[in-house]
Amino acid sequence: MPAPFRPARWLAFAAFVAAVIALVPLTAHAAPKKTVCTITVNSSDEKEAFRRHLPKDEFQFVELVERGRPDWLESARRKGVQCDILVISGHYDGGDYAGGNEFFSEHVDAHEYLPVEEMERVACSASGDGLFSHLQAVYLFGCNTLNPEALRSTPSEIAHNLERTGHVQGEAERMARAWSTRFADSSRDRMRHIFKNVPAIYGFSSVAPLGPVAATYLDRYFRSGGTQELASGRAGARILDYFPGRSLTLTRGLTDADADAGFRRDVCRFVDDGSSTAAKIGFVHALLVRDMAEVRLFLDRLERFTASLKSEDALEPDIADALATLAADAAARDRFLAFERASDQPSLRVRMITVAERLGWLPGEAKQAELMRLVGDLYARPVVTGADVDLVCTLSEEEQGRLGASIGASPDGSADIGHAAIVACLGGGEQRTRVMEALTSPRDADVQIAQVYLRHHPIVDVHMLRDVAMEIGQMADAGAQVRALDTLAHHRLSDPATLEELARLFPVARSLGVQRAIAGILLRADYAALDGPDLARTLREYRLKSPNGRDLIDVLITRLQTAS
Image (cartoon, rainbow, N blue to C red; front, side, top):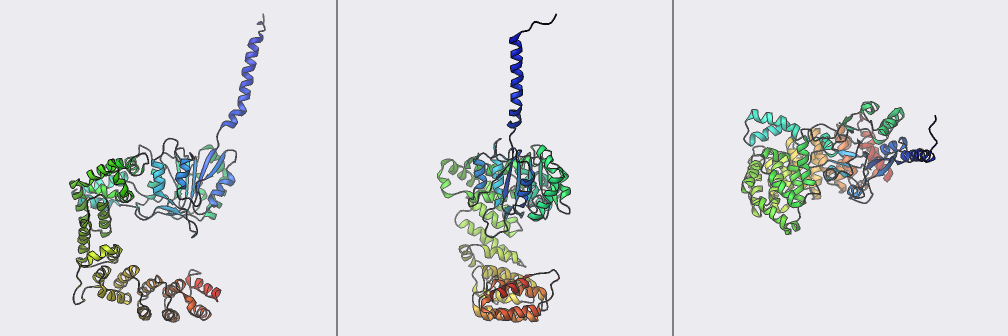
């Protein structure tokens, strides 16, 4: 017997089915678009390749760079932007920590750039909903962005520092191998630390293709199924095959299970916005108690943090207390300065002296005494290098003036050019003439030292410039001659007689390097004082053939013709 018809039950069932059907289109439209964040500090070609191929109903693009605003990355973070995919386009400076590490533009009128330090700050200060917290893939279109070579210290240097702090050779070598993993510091490692837990980070281990070329490769990849891979979140290594002969490589973000996870935590203690300045000073104090060989690995961080401290910070009671406690730690100070004095790298010693002053360990005259010790050690060396001279010349005028009286030149002028250059850097006028004369010396080492000195103290006397130009023309060694000419190029010459002397040297030069060096000087000089058409004819007639196409000589010829 059939069940009795029950209208109420059927109405309830029909209402349920209608509700399910009504939800289907809503569910389909409820899936949020993935956000492709782009940071375009140079070429936009790569960004546009992504934009051409990713479906508009699945992806939205957000350019993080705000022209004319220096804090654009922080601005994006404050707006609550959350990136699923990140594309960074820019030339990349992957030098050591003290001098570089940023994405920049090749265009002289572009002012936007992206320091890796700022990327670290944003990453270290992130909560679970931060700018980089939901990243699935990162694309770094810049040279050496994933270069695996160590930036700071090689295992041999770490071992050397460990021995200086009391570890025997075998133990130091074993520790150095372990520390090379624990304190990983290559460009690739820094990107892994910034983009923690990101499953796919793409970048270049050496030279990257220019923007238009990279865009062509991306087009081919996307047309071959790459769009579907990216949309599904299954981005993998297949894209590497579409950059033939290039160094495109793939890595993943750091995880808490990695050996260098502790190093990342320490790095973040320096830059985390969620930590107070007093807490950061406390961390620095604790760090300085560790093995000095380990402290050395954080020197670049210590430099930046101590440089960021302002005089008004000391007015805050908690900061003042933390600084006073650190400055009063005589044991830590003595270990730090002992390590500095034992170093065989003068530039490292200067950096450590500066940090010690900022920490309150070298107040007043104490810093000058420490610098005097350093300069005295340099001057006592049997051989002084160009790097030593550069270091002394880089000191402030006040420091040089105070140190000058402590260094005495040989009264008979028998000191070699390196020692003479140190005295000249410290204000010794008598030695300056000797150093300038060394620019045309037959000894290559003397030319290099003179070149370093004159970068800091250019020749301003017109008659001396003319004499130097004539003497350069008589030099027999082409390599030394090129270095001497390169030194003059930085002087931005405007004296017609000096320029004419160099122009006369061009036809008789027997080295393409010398001719190019002369062209480099004239390009930077006020060559309007010369007969442009006549000089252009001379250059065309007497130039030596270039084995690699257009060069500085061609550029100079073009400019002379345009100017006339």
